[in-house]
Image 1 (cartoon, rainbow, N blue to C red):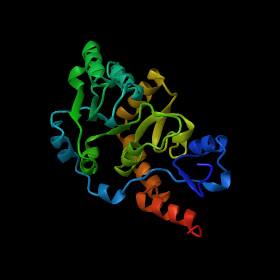
Image 2: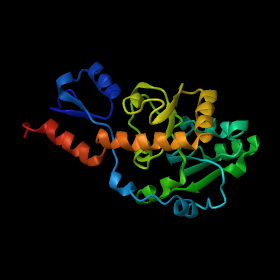
Image 3: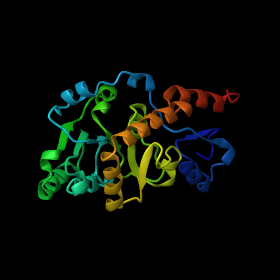
Image 4: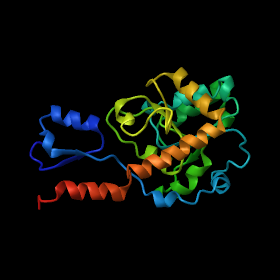
Length: 237
């Protein structure tokens, strides 16, 4: 890193970490991860739910996409489903991971197993067509320096998100605009944010629209990323 002419990082938090390691500030530039927004222009919620086997689901769908480990804190969401405010909500997990067995046992113990749906991994090319099945996109936990791909995909799909209130996510999100943010690791805070969105379809719609607008306004796309990288290395070759 110290010898590189340019170092591209996905968050300003990560840039600060590399500066502390000795990378010169003028060699660093930041561009978050992105998405191909054109893939999300024809949402079909009914078709998406049918594909995922959710035709009979009546309540709000809380969705997560990815490989899930214990540190993703999906256990907080499972606990939240037992709350009165979320008694009709469903959790849908697209993906797989070592936390699955624990989550299944927890859901059974909490009496919410019938509302936790493990739909298995899907090809990434299928994700734009499946996200319209969700009402809310979940990022229950993330490391302090990442730029989560799933977050950009939720935004492209016009979904509001619930995510931890930490600096790397605040580089993209403003609580109350595109997402509701909660104190990291705070199960009650997560549950309260979910309950607010579950109870207010108009709020979900407004925040989902703002998510998509933010993505477009800030060009949080792979093409935008390519343009920024090319601009950063211009004159070096």
